[in-house]
Image 1 (cartoon, rainbow, N blue to C red):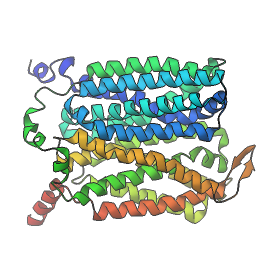
Image 2 (image 1 turned 180 degrees about the vertical axis):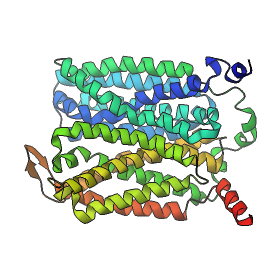
Image 3 (image 1 turned 90 degrees about the vertical axis):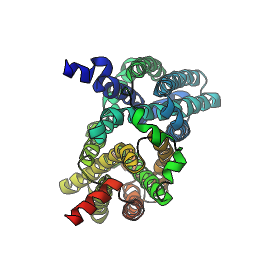
Image 4 (image 1 turned 45 degrees about the vertical axis):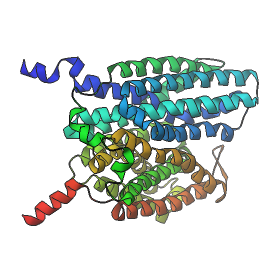
Length: 447
């Protein structure tokens, strides 16, 4: 009886009311990272270059960050409203994208089709992404108060794992749906993801009485809470989050071509899946690991140090240029890809818990949403930084029928290692230890 009182059945069970709905929401919206699988098919079908259609993905990530920043207060006040907004916008964005791909196929080179894809995949889906990403996070931290990192890591891992799960399904659909398979896929998946997200929306619930201990904290607005510590502390968190995403996207956007350069073109799909697993594993592993630390900022120091070491080794050995046929260099380059993916994911999962450790739970959704604006700006700069370097350095060569630029990809690493060093410096200098860490240090000193 006592045990039943604690759990209250499925209606008051943290797995049913927080973890499962979070996974349903994040495993749906995380499929935005499947863009590379079908971007060329969209471009070919509507009669535009791949470069022109690529902006749809950049806009989606930008509006993800901006909607999270501006709708964070909506999530704070009513998770049911925000999760419903996410469900409708994400599914409507996918369906609209499918319609404009269909229209573009019937009217090759139509600017209306391209702009329609920008609006639907970029803006409408982007709003669904931002609100859908935020909605379950605070709920999870409230249900799993003792293991906040593990809980948020579990949900955010769903976002990272979505690519690994959905990629083979999407490829199979493109192969088997016949003529116009690309727009049919979007229309079918719009229905599937609407059902998944709507179920998640219905299940999602904060624990009973959650608001009682938060009244004092909720008396302050978001900016007042941020200013309760030196503003440079928050600026430091925002900047190191932004840099980690920018570096991650710079490498991940070139991952497929780098793998071909080192002679693994035949297994590029397998390596893409493994890197997605590392991305998801980093989200869960780094956040669960951070639960055991006195100061969660330590996890960012580890992420940046590992990224600097592996990037530096590939630079020193010329791993991307010289990796083909050299097992040691091939392993080193793959190690870099996997470490950056894991650190990229770990950076995401630790942000909400790091913010809650610094600023409390009272306005965490709003503060987390504001911080996700870094993701939006990184979505516009990460891919473009790498593309600019690759297009303006090195030399394009034919590699088994594919044009690649090994020197250009290698040069991207010079930019990312500088940024990783800056992020580590910010992490060490601007981001102050949490109150919990200072108390532990003081207790140790007095012992």
